[in-house]
Structure formats: structure tokens, C-alpha cells
Image 1 (cartoon, rainbow, N blue to C red):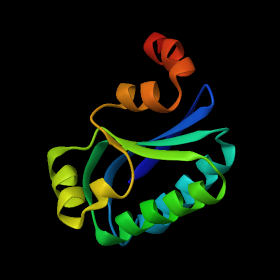
Image 2: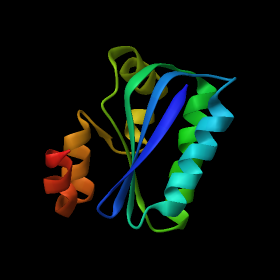
Image 3: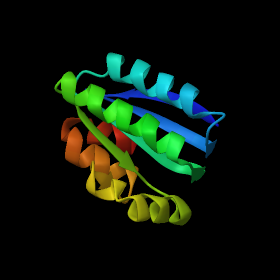
Length: 121
């Protein structure tokens, strides 16, 4: 699992890739919390490169989501692969926080002023 972080307007986007499981969940959580601290208003987790997420990975997301609420920041996930979307649906995490079909839709919803910069990149 690897993560990269991009500042986009008032939002920060984390792009995760690989597998998020017991061996990588702690690092994933640390990346989320660090990005949340840097975000002005929103954190978007781009899961387009994630092939699998375990319950430990879901717990990392929940930790980030709870922290975002405490900081009055919005939190969303975007671009889930079919298997990851199935895991979210079975675990009902798709009902816990906003899930967007694409990263662009997440940016458009959470930080519309950043959309021109997103489209230019």
C-alpha cells in the first residue's frame, strides 16, 4: 500500500493504491490523519488504486472520519473499485460517509472552487 497527497484548493486528496489490510492499515491511518491536519476544509480519499481493503483498513477510514467531524472538516471517499465497493456495501460503510463514483464528483461536491484546478491537472 502506498499513499500520495495532493493539495487541491481547500481540500486535500489522498490517493491510496495496493492492498489496505492488517499490515498496512496503521500506515494508512497515519496518512489520513496527517492529510486531515493539512486540509483547510475537506479530505477526499481516492481509492481508485486500491484492490482490497480489510476491516482494519475500514477502521482506519472510520478513525479519519471521526477526526474530521471533530475538526469540522468534510470527509469522503471516491472511485472505489468493484471489490472495494462490494466490501463497503456489505459492511454498510457506504452509508457511514459520502462515497462518490469519481474523484471529480467528490471535488465538485466538497470544494467546487477547486474544480478548475482539478480539471487542469
